[in-house]
Length: 256
Image 1 (cartoon, rainbow, N blue to C red):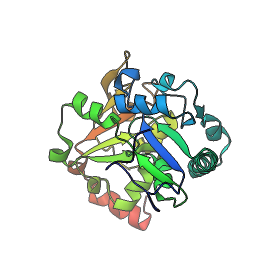
Image 2 (image 1 turned 180 degrees about the vertical axis):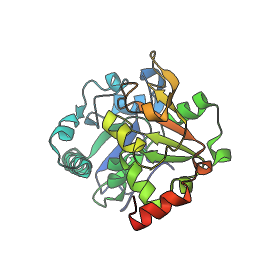
Image 3 (image 1 turned 30 degrees about the horizontal axis):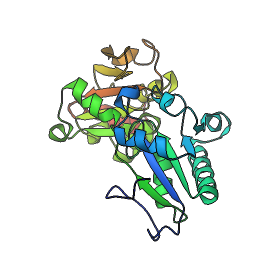
Image 4 (image 1 turned 45 degrees about the horizontal axis):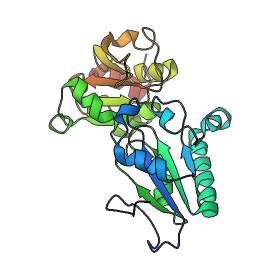
């Protein structure tokens, strides 16, 4: 068993009094993108959980329990993450040490991991892994820091747009993750009175044999391809597309 390192994120004493949850990521693609450190932990920790079996690298954890059934029965997504936290902590209390794996990186858009980190009942050790972001930036050929790119969850796109007040406040470049259904794509397309861009770059199945990167017109965003849990969008030029003043007046005063 590896000892907690600088990757450790925990509440409580690190003396071993608390049960330990080791959190790993399976990377953004197939088994070839799983780190050697993660494979060592999978081989050494007997009690294992996997957030979802719907991932190309899930085959490296054939004995893990997964939580896909929760997505089918929960009323809201937050209930899923809280149920996962409780199941992992309950088992950690019984066995002392458990392994919890998620797709991609455990520190990128993983609410269940954040809940475990914040919970004082366990010592949570987060191990690094490759994120889908690494592949996305490479395929797009961009430096996200230089561009000031933002990452937005597709399921929260409308909410984020309301928080910032206007599309231009999102910045010039946005990577939208978890665009897993046409309903999500429709919500994104209809989030603003005007198109946020003329075309959108679709990143689909990055790191897999059937990987594709292609552009679609904004108006065809929710009708030209079939998305899934490995689909993201790259939107450029948002800050240069301002809503005309007359549209703002109509929206503010309810005029036709």
